View 1 (cartoon, each protein chain N blue to C red):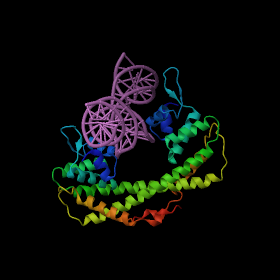
View 2 (cartoon, rainbow over the protein chains, first blue to last red; view 1 turned 90 degrees about the vertical axis):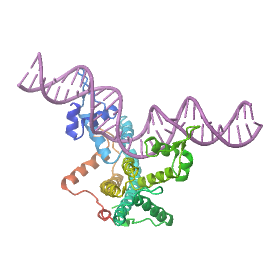
View 3 (tube, each protein chain N blue to C red; view 1 turned 60 degrees about the vertical axis):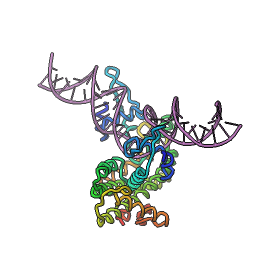
Length: 156
Length: 156
DNA sequence: ATAACTCTGTGTGTAACACACAGCTCAAGA
DNA sequence: TCTTGAGCTGTGTGTTACACACAGAGTTAT
């Protein structure tokens, strides 16, 4: 199999396949006559693994570390279990940030619909943004963030 | 005010101030004797605006566009209102992806705790990851994604 | 043979900074 | 006055996971 064939088969771009090869995640053999990369079944399994892991949020670096074990014949299961726990924590954090940002945005859209269009002055560039943030600071100081979506905090 | 003074005052790094200057968001004057950047009150207002806008999720590019209006003395309010609507849509999308990822991760952690540590074979690198994704594909085909957190879909 | 297409490696761009570095400036102490 | 140490400067590179561009070589169909 050549680059484009593997890429089509797995629904990714040829550039993606080249990228993973370039950084050493894939090691296809090279055709002796034209130098083209040649992928066999094991390479495809490897590529599928990469895509599955990326799908679960593993970074390319994570995958490198995983391969460094499995390429020695060792099980990566324990490592994978540890990595995914870290991933979940990171995701939780990002999730919370998204919730806050989302609330902030929708509140801003509401509030701003009532406010006039002001022209910039020496102290104020766009009062919508500048005043919005004033409020945020006050809220944070009081420990009462706006519009926190409690229901979305639990994992199901 | 010099770089570090402004940075300290607003709680960011000196590199951040230099970065915004480098890309043209800030235009401090230069001290004629030593070439140091010199920030006045207007520069500080500008920097505060940048930080507030970034806080609301505006990109540096967005801010450039906003300044291109306000620097001509025009109101940016309407533009800002439009930009934030786009931002909210993007955030919604990312939020949904986070929810799905989070569910996927926590489900994987649960499922994997029961599964053995296998050694890689020619067709399987880490059965945890490879089997997990099989399930995902099935779910998507059936249109029944795992563990979607309905409560977190509404904006409050 | 020629056109039309695919493949190759390599280099650059993306977002928003962080970090490094060589060299200049400056205030203070000995 | 000299030195020391801190702070400043611009510029270059690294970060993530690819996408895109490009010149040149290989392949396929007519």
